[in-house]
Amino acid sequence: MTDSNPTAPSKARGKKRLELDPRLAAYRGVWVFVEIERGQVHPVSWELMGEGRKLADVLQVELGAVILGADGARLGEVAAEAFTYGADRAYLVADPVLADYRNQPYTRALTDLVNRHQPEILLLGATTLGRDLAGSVATTLLTGLTADCTELAIDPDNRGLLATRPTFGGSLLCTIQTLNFRPQMATVRPRVMAMPDAQPGRTGQVTQETLDLAEEDILAKVLAFIPDQNQEKAQLAYADIIVAGGRGMGRAENFQVLWDLAGVIGAEVGGSRPVTHAGWISAERQIGQSGKTVRPRLYIAAGISGAVQHRVGMESSDIILAINNDPNAPIFDFATYGIVGDAMQIVPALTEALRSRLAVRRRAG
Image 1: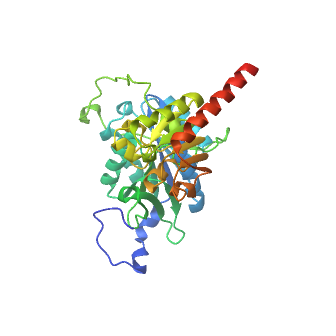
Image 2: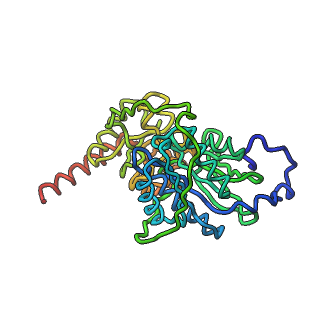
Image 3: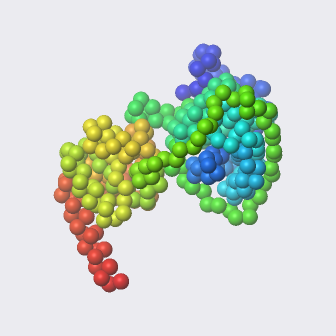
């Protein structure tokens, strides 16, 4: 697929379609928007920095970190951290109107930066904040945006960004290019990309810019900040171990065996889209393209067939243990280990074995 800008004129497909507007040659560099909320950097920003470093190396251009906020000193600290994760240059905009995220000032600040420095690629996290900002910036810049990407690469023929994402409900993967518009924009969900190793001591250049926008010109006002009162909700995106179930579990009551196993090994419990829609588990525990993307050290999939929609949300797990009574289930094609059998027999046996093993260790230690 090409040209994700819906306003782009229709042209015949073929080789001529790859001839780029010469004016696009002025755009150079890969940028990552560094998301800061209440003073804390969202981990997806560093995950994207690692991916952006790879793209910038292929293109032989600078990797830039865009850092917006009100506290100049804090922005400087974040810039120093961005350098350790691969950034060559940090673009800082410190202004009181950027103290809390609001679409209008953040869109203005980011579009002004893009128009002034002309990066060819701009990456943002597909978080609540990132999705809101990315759509507004792409609309303002009249460029294309590919959302919820699972893979990013460079087309060697035209320096274009190859942005791959699931489509048709997760049943297919498509690769999208924005050929005749810049910057090429994409969002990536947390935990899709690996966290890069920090390089302590690495430094870079800082470019400071200003924002010509007064508080009275901004329509939305922040009246108060009310923190989330439910701090005990599922944290699937950052769990080290996840036990997940699918339709192969039979019915909602059978999920108790997964909760029992999770309690023994300190895991989170998740599930596929069908069981979420059936009400067997809550929506916040859904894993897959339309749910959470996870990257645990161990992912135990019980009664999950392994459809693409689910696969894209968990295939980056370090170790995948699949339990399914269908030997031809797609999940066995990419699982690290597979057990063919009834999950309702295997999972309780696994739970008891691990419980006994841990009890022995406690007595010995």
